[in-house]
Image 1 (cartoon, rainbow, N blue to C red):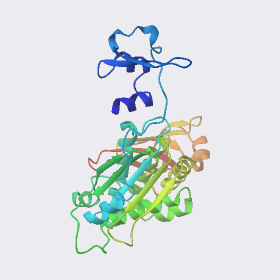
Image 2: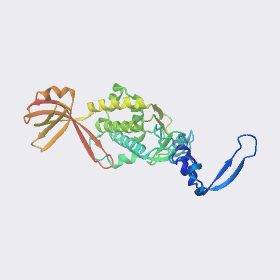
Image 3: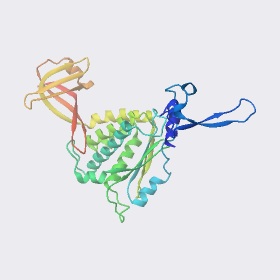
Image 4: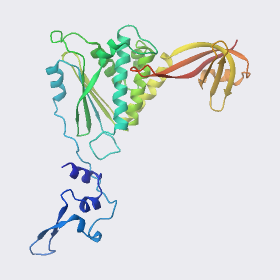
Length: 341
């Protein structure tokens, strides 16, 4: 069955399908053009002459179900029977005829979702940090694991790995609070005001993590369906977004992230003033650090009239991309203000 699916979806070309048959032989069927009796004979695939076969590289291109479709109520059943939060993510990648998810696309989406939950969970505890490792206790509470993969489109089911409480179903866990925030963010779509009201209390790490999640969803070139089932009957819900809605949300979140990003004051020498590409560079003699990055529109007039190697006071926005598991980070800078020191 799997080989048939590969042939149907174009994974195996038609020449190889016959010439390298799995059983070593194929059936030649001869049917008369008019009335008569059809004949069937067994032929060793290796002995078929090339003139009787399709050209090398010729393939079918039929959309093919290569994974079983998950049962409609499997997610809700997993949540209620196991007393755990359960999430389904469904994609419809435009670039494949199979109901499969390329690892290069789906892997980063799942990692980004997990890191969004981690960062939001940290913010929900009341002690959000811009960088560094998140406490292991928080990561243990927000962790999810893959339990099922299905076709139809391409669907992944996740459940909480934290030990469930069988007697406190009505209580909200840290993961359920984080999932509620993710669902609300997705529901906000590209509404800048709604996104701002949600992301400002969560601080810069969560904003950065959510923006990266949208980047990975956008890179999948696919509509996305997010469904959450909870053992708590008051919680859960689903959101569906088109590819265009994901793009609009990413644009809006990028704007809001600049507003909630950490900001630092730096006094240093202006060593780069590139008005063509809107780039800047400041060297802080005290810390021996150089800050390079883009220039916001608000600071561009000041940079245009600035003098190289002169000292300036600058307000710089810092956007961090962080792995919550390792604490590794990369900082990008944007110049917001530039004034003579």
